[in-house]
Figure 1 (cartoon, rainbow, N blue to C red):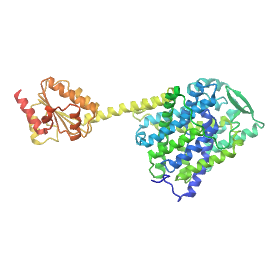
Figure 2 (cartoon, helix red, strand yellow):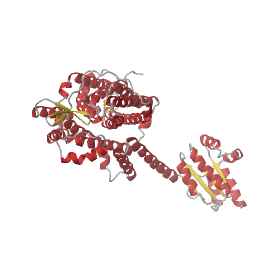
Figure 3 (cartoon, rainbow, N blue to C red):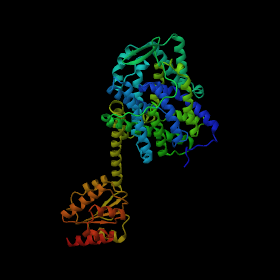
Figure 4 (cartoon, rainbow, N blue to C red):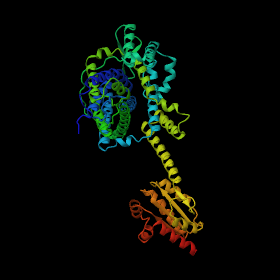
Length: 566
């Protein structure tokens, strides 16, 4: 097995260009997501470096660029908040627990890959993913309204909504002007310019320079709500940013919090896996290649584990950075690894410059990220899309924004499963033939058809096609509520390749009901796997073995004999 998936040196020039371009795009996004998480801009940079490097080296998508993403940042902000609230007097300890959760999430992703769960993650229905991603986009936008207007970022969605009237009624106009400039650039920069220099970087440089020359003077610092606050004039800025390579920190475990830590880690692992594999599909479409989903999960897990050890935000495959990388010529893991090394070089020497970056500027950039995450394509189809799918989408969206992320996905999956089961049942019932005469049955032989017609409607014949689900079996059982009109029942399973446990119980109920009403019932055409299942579950008993092995013709003959006797 190749140590680094997709590694070759035939595209070294394109990989260098792609890696450099992806790093330029990643810098402002990593800074902004670090701030949005509540930990600080350096955590975003560290996350981009470690997740980007190790996911490229050990992942299964050659051209993918990884790092902090909007969904992962939202979840991480909630995790940090949870533990900061539990340990308000010891924020360093709270942060250590939160980063331990990141490590646990990474280890769970590695486990997902080892257990080969990648193929199952790809089975999540689109309405669930659409509602979840749209909800994440809405959360990002709501959380950035405050910083956009010059106020502090709130700790949650409801808090952000509650604080919005005050922020709107008393904006810091200098911050609002900087944010407005950022929004104009990220939304309206001409494509001929953004194709050369990404719009987030143009906004970052332009907004910082405008503030530097407009509010010339030293940065002042103060403490607000237990946090350091840095101002340049009246505009909040990043302030002092650590430089250098971080020192790894050992994980910290609280026995009483282990359950909530594991739950949070599971959310990170599941979300990071979904986010990464969706981006892998985008990369596949652009490069005409195929990713290795389980290896990608292992690579992302290693990256997140290392990021947690070094105090970095968790990450995933980043769609925007991956697309930029591919368009710039990147096609191998070299580009993703180079993007991480470039960010490392930048942070080692750019801390003194980054301290002047305004929070409002990053808020403007992140609002663009939030609107890009929203699934506008699905929302445009609201009038024509299936109503059931739209109901699932909006339910997941509402739960994501206002209740709980993992509950949102779980509820969406449950709704989608019931919807799928209903559709399967409908299809199976349509393919089920119920007849008392041979007029509309084409698969019977002439002799079989003649016998069924001779019974004059006293033989009820069921022919089932395809795998038999429990819901179809239940529907079939529900349809046979009265045996008084028949003397015999034949259930033809010759076209049923497999059967589940609940279906065996439904068939058993039908057979018992027939027996209790004094009617004879036959199971015919059982394939080996179906016969074995029915025997193991006691539906076909020892005394019924001969009847169960009858052919359809023999069962019809026996049934006709019963009809004539009656």
